[in-house]
Image (tube, rainbow, N blue to C red):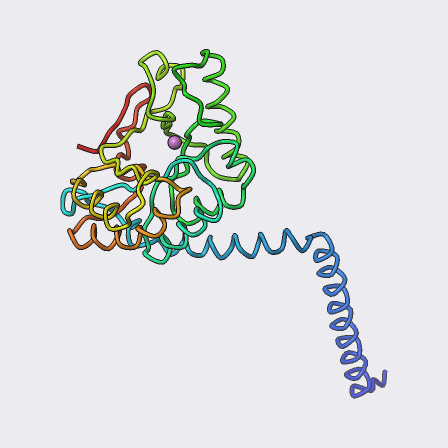
Length: 266
Ligand code: NI
């Protein structure tokens, strides 16, 4: 049989080219159909999430393995958010300073702002439960208490964030009976600069820095401008005094029990 090898080679080349073109076309059709499935809004959320996710995987300095004996730890905590524009600005400050903290969120606000709630988590912060609508729990029935706690757990989980493992009672008001009904560790504080009522940034910075000790839990708020303004200086001053700033989950890791209350890590 007389085979024209040159011609066979050409046919093979043409078949190869055709196959490549076919693959290109198929990929084009596939990717444009995927494109069509993702709305513009979803795309911007996805872009943001991956940006935050990159940040979390980098592990901020304060999320590296921690030894609070070698270097004293302090937990900064922020209640009553998420609330714009303050919470975003606060997150910006914490990110630029590479600090991870603990946020005690109000359920209805977290439900209304899932992207912001998820951002807290992705940037290395604890996202914890501060009730659904900041009710005084000493005035509620056991059923309402359970509902306040559970709806907030659900709102956080709906934002694609692990469900909270701590509860902070609104106004710090609680009784042993209420603690039992909540079923989560009760997280209080030992340093309260009353940032919500302060108008002088210098005074706010001084109050925090003068009262913090190793193991302190500082309560502040995620919905006040003065807190955002003071935060870079508070962080710098505490680091100057050689404290490492970490979330409560890390400071008290392994020692949290439901129906107990905590004021500090001392
Ligand atoms: Ni509060």
